[in-house]
Image (cartoon, rainbow, N blue to C red; front, side, top):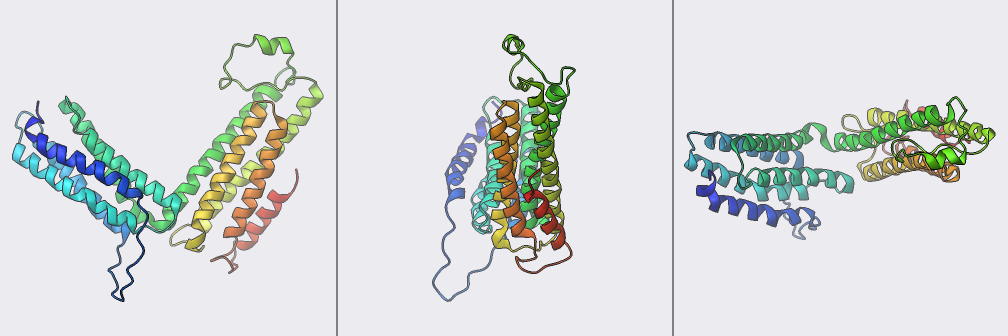
Length: 329
C-alpha cells in the first residue's frame, strides 16, 4: 500500500482534524479585561493565506506520491505542513463578525476542506482517486480564498442571492402549475375517478384543482396574483444585493443577520405558497402569501435607507416596492 510508510503522519493529521472540528463552533471568547490591546485578526486575509499554503502543500503531496517514483520524505514533510495549518483556522473563525448565517457558511467551507483532506487519505485509494482527492482539496481551498474579495457584505449578498434563486425556482414551478392544471383543454376540470386512477407520483405532476370550473378560474386568479408578488420579490432581493450590499455595503453591519433571516423567511413562505396550490390547499397558499408579503415588508424596512436612517436615491424605490407588496391583489 503506497501510504503505509506514512501511516503515523496520516493518523496524526486525521486526529487533529477530528479534534479541531468541534472547536470551530465554540463561541467567541470575550476580549481580555487588561488594558493591553490584542492584535486584531483580519479573518478573510488569514483564511486566504492559510488556504493558499494548504493548497500548495497538497499539490506537493500529490506530486510526491505520483507513481512510479514515490518520494516518501517529501510526502511526509507535506503532510506535516498541512497538519500544522489545521489549528490555525480557529483564530480566523473566531475573528469573523457576529453574523450567525455568515459564520455558519464559512465554518461549513472549512468543514468541507477538512473532509476533503481526510478523504484524500482513504485506505486503498488508487492514484487516479488521489488526483481527484487533490482536486477536491483545491476546490475547498479556492472557496475560502475567494472570501477575501467578497468581504462581509459580499458573503451576505451571496446568501441573499441563494434565497433569490429559490424564489425564482418556486415561481417557475407555479407557472408550470398554471399551464398543467389551469390551462388544460378541460380548463382544469378533473373528476374524482380520473384523480383516483392516476398513477403519477406527487412530484411528477401537481394535484389538479378538482371540482367546478368556476373554482379553477378563482384559483388561477389567485395564482396569477401570487406570481406577480413573487416576481416583485425577485426584483427586490436583486435590488438589495446591488444597491445595499455591493462593495462596502451601505446598510449597518448590525442588521445583516436580520436581512439574511428575512430573505430566508420570504423564500420559505414562497415555497409554502407553491405547496399549498400543489396540494389543493388554497387557503394555506393564500396564508403563506400573506406571510411572505409581511416578511418582505420587514426586510424593506431594514434596507430602505442607508445605515438605517439616511435616505438616498434608492429609498423611494424601496418605499414604492413596500407599498406594492402590501397591497391586496
